[in-house]
Image (cartoon, rainbow, N blue to C red; front, side, top):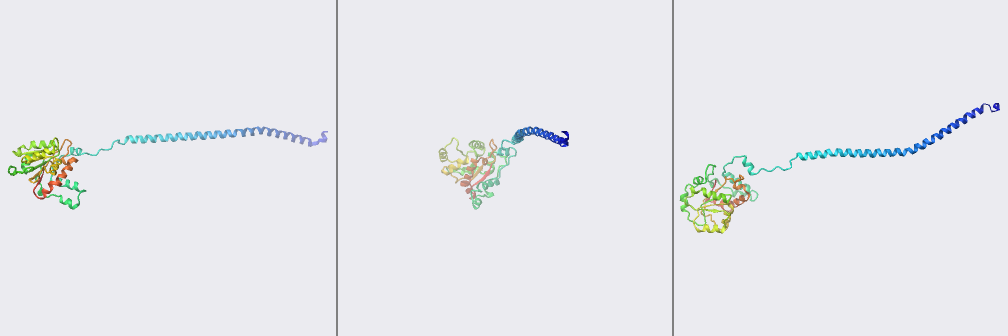
Amino acid sequence: MGDDLGDEWWAHEGKSDGSEAEEETRQEKQPTEKTNTKTKPEKRKSVTETTDKAKKKKKTEQKECVIPQKKDTEDDKSTKPKRKRKKKTITDVLSSSEPKPGCPADLQNLITQHFSDKRSVIEQEELQLLDSCFLSSNDLTHTVSSYLKQVCPKWSKIQKQHTEQSSVVLLVVCSSALRAIELIKQMTAFKGPAKAVKLFAKHIKIEEQVKLLQKGVTHIGVGTPGRISALIEKEGLSLKALKYVVLDWNWRDQKLRRMVDVPEVKLDFMKLLESSILNGCKEEKVKIGLF
């Protein structure tokens, strides 16, 4: 029997054993492949989770990057001045500098600056005054009486010759009612028996001032430019006998402002100059002094 089978039997046995081994290995591989197929989606989930975590980390990192920028801007805002710098006022400028006496050139510059955008070039030339129209200016050493004695040396003779009502020979222009009262008190040594009248609006009606000027002869008028202009317009005050106009130029109030530094007073003053005084100066009837 063994001889009949020969060597081929053994070969077939080996092959069968090998096929069985191959089948066993295939069977072993199949569950592993199935398990591999099952684990693949789990791997994908883990990838998505990692991507989500990475995105969250990026967002947190971006937020962390933005926060210091805000702090920097807040620090910059804190370092910047919250309030704007205030412009220097007249008091600031004058408190740090010594007052200088006024001169005719100061008045000329004021006139040109005020009318530069209101009048033509020809009209501005007409507003210019000659040096002969001015009296000597105060050098900050005079009182009111001493200055008036200097610019009006023949005052006693002039006041005796003045007999016209509703008119004055000397007109003193100042910034306020209190200053007008003060000036009248200080000029007693100069005026002598001459009559001085207050020409301001505070506590005095314009009708009362018109009646006062009509009653008798008035030699000196001391007041504010607004009320003086109003009296001239209502014909309560005449400038026919006017010879001297003294401007209270150098005096300063508590805020170190001159008469021409106060906007309202300045406008009234320029109106008075243009409407009444400048024409008399050109006709050589009136002279201007800066006290």
